[in-house]
Image (cartoon, rainbow, N blue to C red; front, side, top):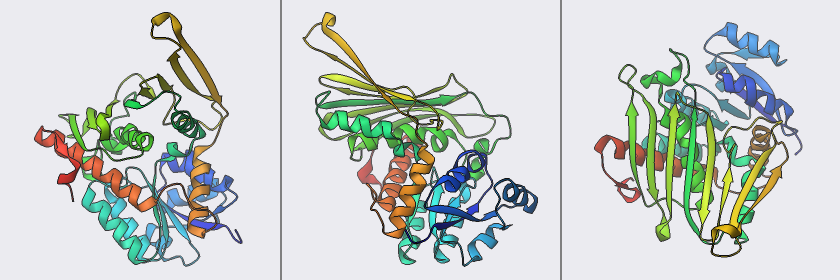
Length: 341
């Protein structure tokens, strides 16, 4: 690349501070141009912390001609507004997951990006960790036979009262915050979209947002995916892929610190009995999947290296599956993806 992608930061969130901004600074293909917040004091604090010479409001980010791309880290409920404004200003977009609150909203976002010849990626950073590539290699080499099912769970202790995740007007709820991860992972592993979804969301009476949920997705050739997520629980961040000849499992699948060694576990049998059960472990060296995502995004938008997936199609497909989950829970029925257009 002849020059680095200059990022404007829209939203001074915890994940921006702890992970994404440091990853942009670490990337050899990106740099911070300006940091924006609703609070100028907060924007100034962030700019001082990260040695950014410029700070301002969200509008300042959008109007800055030196900005090539924006990172949107606002509450989910206002992602659409700022994505459309950024696209209209000719900025590429890295948008925190979940991209938005509905399939219609997601289509509006990608439509404006296409009209303005800019790219948008939904920040499912876990996809860029090398442990998943190892899982795919094992699957592609027929290590566990034909795929049968995916089981994924993501849960953690409760967030403090007043956290934006409990605000329905801002796109709160934990389907958007955590359930989206194993849903996305099942689609990534199967490399296809589900036929339909059956979902049950537990709604907190005080806040009106979903705090836990389970879903069952049916894929082609009778493959299935079962998903569990929960706020206010013992921490889990894992998935398991079951095949006709074995099982692959990850214990730390979605949120991985950059200095953390992960393990890809394989179980299989050499004969059709319990005594022949074997296991293998592949240790994956530490990797900063945030920087891996930033690098892939910058290389794609600069035309230097094509990504392994289409950003806009992936964003829309994920939003469609998320919509099916909401409809299924609200109407208490199985929802076919063909119903959603």
